Image 1 (tube, rainbow, N blue to C red):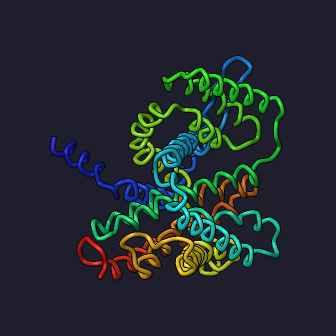
Image 2 (cartoon, helix red, strand yellow; image 1 turned 45 degrees about the horizontal axis):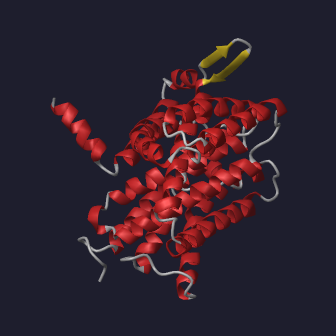
Image 3 (spheres, helix red, strand yellow; image 1 turned 180 degrees about the vertical axis):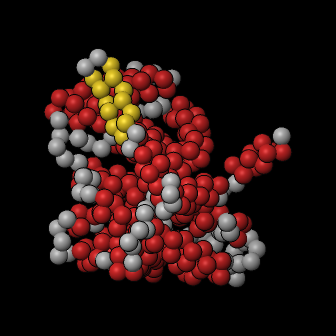
Length: 388
């Protein structure tokens, strides 16, 4: 009974999702560098098949996590985006201006830094988008460790920036990491989209019909060559507002406490056998780490500073320049989203790319998490309220 209460109390914490993410990643690293490495990789390589007559999907368990469960995550992102546009922080242009500009700076500069390190190699240059992402669950988890010392305006700034960052990641995936399109499957996806539109125009209010058509959309998009997670975002925009609220509420716990930790467990395991300092200093991991640490910090803080000084947008309520600097560094936690984009960028290019990209992502995200937390802890007031 006490254990059940303790688990319930833990899951009520804002930081619980970030803690579980970190724990899952640490466990994956431990297994990948232990005698159980074969068990870990064998588990992820387990072939899982779904077959209906001539239709089949046969993929390793790792890809079911990345293409299937992450579609649920992107579905939740789509629901959150829809709510924010209709009635939240994205409903007012004045509210969205500063985080929108900061998000753009926090994507452009990391990509530029990465390309500067990898300009001479067309293969590694494909990973330019890896350091453009921010892991909202991890960043919020770290921020919540500071409790009521964090001004509400700073939290709203981070949430809005992260939502817009996710939108940017979705656009990047659709435009730059989609190839080998299958016309037949795209046609089926088009029919599914027409079905969703018919349900929406027919004012169907229950979520189940949308979800059933959405499942067809996901399977057809998966077979088409477009990344299947985009089906989750598209489906979210057709869900009626009342049903969307209920789905968002129901999906938050499984996404935060199961899907994202499982994704981290499946993707963060890196064997350090043969890894040296030179491995970290290679252009690929160094470009990722520098993009996350330097690019995110300078891009977000620099653009925010210019926007406020030029009168384009107000400073987040209760924030100081020092606390905004700490938050900008915290946004360098790329982790799950960076791992996800890395898997798309170097798909099929061999395990050496998987290892080196993960080294850069884990190193950059760790420095951003520790550094951002340290700066915020130093610059935020000891108690809740406006900094003096």
